[in-house]
Length: 248
Length: 245
Ligand code: HEM
Ligand code: SF4
Ligand code: FES
Image (tube, rainbow over all chains, first blue to last red; front, side, top):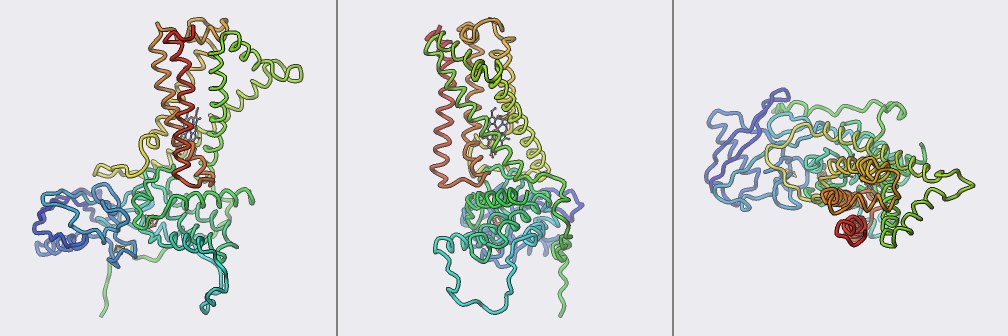
């Protein structure tokens, strides 16, 4: 199939950037979205042009690097699917596809489609951990965890830190990402001692990075490739308010 | 072999957060501001429920309605001064509205600051609909409505009967069939309030960390807002269509 791509090109953080149009022929429906971009880049290189910079690593939906806004939807049209797992069979001959980087002040564009998501790392650094000696593996079942809690904690732990939630949020809020980690650790016995201080530190770091506040629009969970649910945010809010009431 | 990857900031080591005392943070957190919105919103919702119940007394006739209005001014007398409790409630409402709007404005500015660049492609909402997207401007419209409403019914300045008339007469004159455009304005505004609450009711519980079972919760929020909207609408409509005169 033949496609028209409109890709955001920006040579560096200080370039103002623009959408550039590319016509691309003979795209196989079996290609993944990133493979389609690979083909575009091969052709650009052969033509002596600068290839389109985009982030990717695992290409199997687990690393969260392949961030891009496809026709105004984070990770494109398929639900619960990262860009690398999106296949060209969902498009048809003659389609025009607009590809842009995540847009949020805390995610500055590095080049083309690549944004700097280290704000997420700093939110995790602020409290997304448990302080235990992590020597040898503990005995299985030494610590009882109810099955529902284990399942919910695991679901929350599947967040891959891709940033789609921020990109889709009209407020540029990082609540879903932050809440996923707070839920993951807050549901497990190992996470209890730091549960309150973790919620406060992570929520405050989120503000500090310049992310907006949540207005419960639900746009985040709708595009999240891992389907992290909104109730994680309720849990984050509860933990945060409880901790704030206690320590004023 | 060495590989040089030059991707600028993306590959630089993450800057460590300088440890600093928590107290030095200058801003109230967005989560706390949202909690203020939720609590002040809940106060306003409670008021709306009482206000609606009071309005419905119009169907019991002029005496009952005026009696209720007079009672509001006399509750607790002589323990409390004349209009004592009412003034207290009014002050509470003013504080709630001020806190609610202040938080809404600060949060809206932070949100605009967090998303300075718009997407070139048209962004389709994939989640909640109209009610959610109209919270901010809808809220502003509701605010202007409240101002007009006070001028009309409370102070009587915008009312044909004026301040001296009984509450019943003011109400009936306000929605006289000849003033149908006022009724239309009220209908639109009350529907806006209903929309605001359709999202606001469950959103407040989510903000306070109390939300559970979302389908039930959202359905109840929609049901309660519909009930409030209808309860507020029947009174002006009944007057304009001559059911109450
Ligand atoms: C006078 C009647 C009003 C009532 C009963 C009311 C009620 C509520 C409630 C219960 C919430 C939910 C709080 C939360 O999500 O945590 C809310 C949110 C909100 N209200 Fe109001 N409000 C009123 C007026 C206003 C006005 C005048 C404004 C305008 C500035 C406004 C703007 C907002 C905004 C921006 C939100 C947050 C939206 C969101 O959570 O998505 N409201 N309101
Ligand atoms: S919550 Fe979902 S959308 Fe947000 S970073 Fe994690 S995986 Fe990505
Ligand atoms: S490249 Fe790893 S999730 Fe897409």
